[in-house]
Amino acid sequence: MQQGAKDLQGWVTFLSNVDIPVLKQTLRDLHTLRDTGDSASALSISLIIARDPLMTTLLLRYLQSHKRRSQTTEVMEVEQALLMLGIEPFFNNVVSKISVEEMMGEQKIALLSCLRVVHRAHRASSFAFDWAVRLRDLHFEEVRIAALLRDLAEILMWCFAPAEMLKIKAKQDQNPALRSGSAQEEVFGFRLKSLQTELVKQWQLPNLLLRLMGTESGKTPRVLNVVLADRLARHSSHGWDDAGLPDDYKDIAALLNMKVGDVKEIVGAEPAPDDK
Image (cartoon, rainbow, N blue to C red):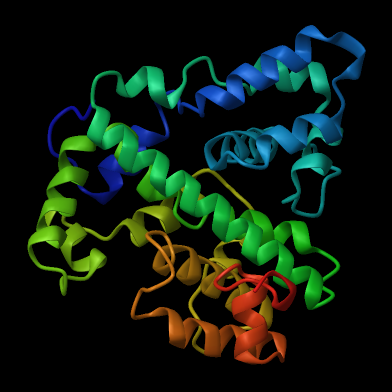
């Protein structure tokens, strides 16, 4: 899939000129919905797109590149984007023709790793959505999407550079103390976070996306929500005994003004009192 070594800008150019795949289940559900005719609505379609970071990206990217002069505000909500674009134009111009599973073919280990990142991103988006509602954020959908897309570059590189991503995984398996960013620099010559930033700019995705994908330092509750949701999804991806989780619970408790025990309950780390 990768045609020779590329630097950061080379990857940005490459990814900007290839067909981006989406999840097989997304394509199946969208085609089924379209075949039902009148039942396809912006809401029903958005519910399908909501779990797929790649399809969400394709929609926002297309809308940004085809926005009207009268559009003065950025659109970062899937249902709103569909309403502005229209159902038929969405199916005709946005829906990918290839699935992740089809494109990656026999690369089973890399495919499984890619789908794990997608699943982790979806879990992060669910956490962020719930917390945004609890914080009475009127634009909770923006927060959810920011969390869903925070690992977009990693998902894309599993699709288009599986061999290199497996090298990174092997390095970290051999040295658990090796940080992801350092391993990525060793293999690619840059960090995937830098690639993510450049793709958001190149594809003219909403600037709000960049802000909500930021780090904790000196940031707003919305940004902190996204960062903590991503952290929790990562640390809990293999169970609820990761060493980083206690700090996550404390930080989330501070964000939501809750007790640590209550945080553990709402995220599913421990059963509710009635279930014990």
